[in-house]
Image (cartoon, rainbow, N blue to C red; front, side, top):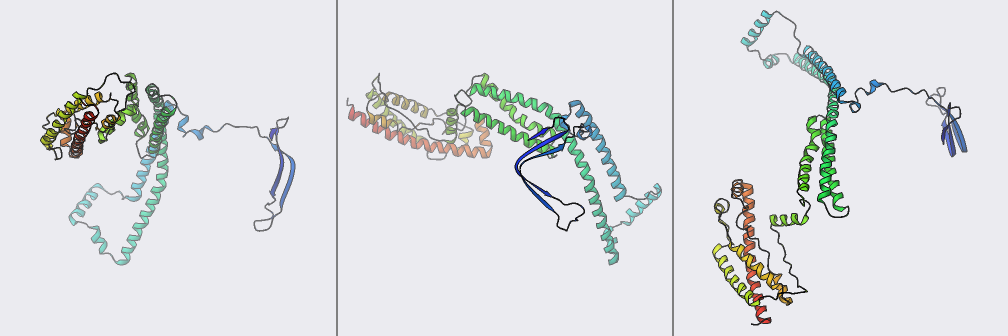
Length: 437
């Protein structure tokens, strides 16, 4: 227990159930001789410590280079002072380097011009001059050059420590000046992200909102921390490092705010799943279930005629379009012609499925689930708009991808049409067997 005495002049330290160790070494024993050692075991012990209440304020000069405690005006003033100071130091270092490394004694201007002309006419070559020197002098020249270079490198390394510290101070002041605005801007950005997300994510509980919030904050933290460290180290410019996180999150804030104002379901995962299924060509399995209450009985005779006619149309379509062959790239990307036959076939198929789904026959219900879900346009062209098809055809990597994708959908349509023909034949047989005319 540590407490002050009644006169406020000492601190009383109360200890219980401990041991006290003390090495009694002093200057009289020296360093190499054995010294006394004391060990004390106690149940309770009190120690009085002198209480020095003469507190002094920290010297303000020690905080002069701390940019975080300064306002905008003081930051601007100190930055100008720092730049002026370190620019003058750099100029002085430059002059010192000129005098030490490239110093030449002053001579008359006419003599200097005459010497330059003479050196030019003589075509002075330092390598040939060095080669004509005796070996001892060559070694002496090389040693002197190495010594001067090492001395210059050591001097410049020492001076660069001071200039690097100055650059770091200036960057810290610039970072703090930009942070005065970027922190406030980040708060506004998070407001325009969080409020719309609360309106868009309407599912109960904390699952999806917490996940989205954590992901957004992780992205912001990584970008902000990376930009700060890169800007502080001088790898990136200060304005770029400090504006990286707001620049990335601002479009997201605008997007979710726009979607929330238009009452759009951004986090409709079913829509995203359907989009990627269409993009990657993944199949969607058909699900037809038996109904407990049936109001209208199926029109079996009309359905049989539609299925038989559909089989004839399927055979004709496969024979004409040659779906197994590679399509013509020019017709695909530049001379597209609409193909409505598959769309009409799909409409009739869905009509028959909707009508036969009212049946009580479980075999027919099971057979209806064998029908594939047709992709009616993916086998004809990559996009709906003609200019997009032309651009994708001109850009070679995209064109190859969409061409192979379309050929995959052609093969898929060929297999689906064969499945439809076989399923039609099976359902017609079931209807004739169980519901004779």
